[in-house]
Amino acid sequence: MTVVQQLVRGKKRWCVDGKVNGKRKRMFFGTKAQAETWKKAEEKDTLSAAWWLDLSNGDRVDVMAAFNRAKEDGFSLLSAVETHAVQGRGKTHLKKMTLKEAVGYAGIDKRWKNDANERQPCGFLGDKLLANIGQGSINTLRCGLENFMRFAGPELQCRAVSPELVKSWLISGGDKESHWESNTQKYYSGHVRNLFNWCIRQDVVTENPVLKLEKINLDPFDPYVLTVDECRKILNLCREKHCEVLPLLALNLFCGIRPSETRRLNSSKGRDCNFDWKEN
Picture 1 (cartoon, rainbow, N blue to C red):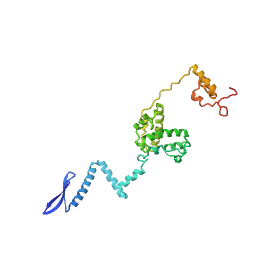
Picture 2 (tube, helix red, strand yellow):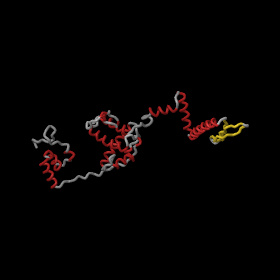
Picture 3 (spheres, rainbow, N blue to C red):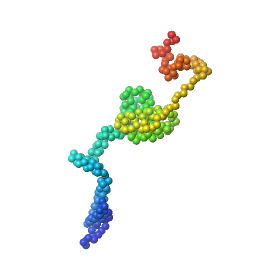
Picture 4 (cartoon, helix red, strand yellow):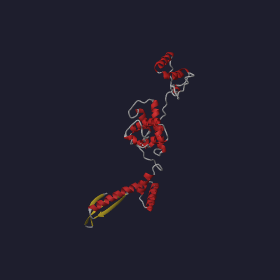
């Protein structure tokens, strides 16, 4: 639309000339300021009309029904949407939660003596503490999850975590770019998988990004078999320097008991001893 000065019936008038919704429209004003003001208002209205015309019939019906309902109840349509956006989280749509908030905190860690340890338990780790998970297991979870949090960014929204991001973290070896073996990658990916299973239960995400990754398969363990000379050497070493290990080693070598089983036995004398030294 253009604003031009024209002579109308012997008087100078300001004319706004242009097309509105495909039809030509001309308006006359006594001053240029009035013409410019009307032009701006009309152009703004034209943009609104174009937006309305781009809507489908179903969307128009919904907007009109919502507008009329809000007007009847005494509030604006915008205020209704803003209220729903806050109060509807976790009911009709997902909550907002950063990785830092999701990982949370498991309470005071006795290994560290600083003010940061005074925070209250919260998030995933806080719930694990409530579930009476052992402190050692919680520390292990915290180590892996905080590594991922530092790699991805503490303020990153949980819904923005993609399978590609998790894969990049595993391949890079964490935030310190260490070289992780397959068993370490599988171990740490399990921590992140558990975190996002918790996020699903908290209505933060709908899918677990770790489950979209290929399963990490580990090579079967191939035990090393000692030769006779190696057995003799290690038995002599234990007899001379580590006598308490000798009974466990003898069971492992000659009785077919696994190393993991012998590690659970106690050969020291006392109430918890698993050996009867009197009867040998």
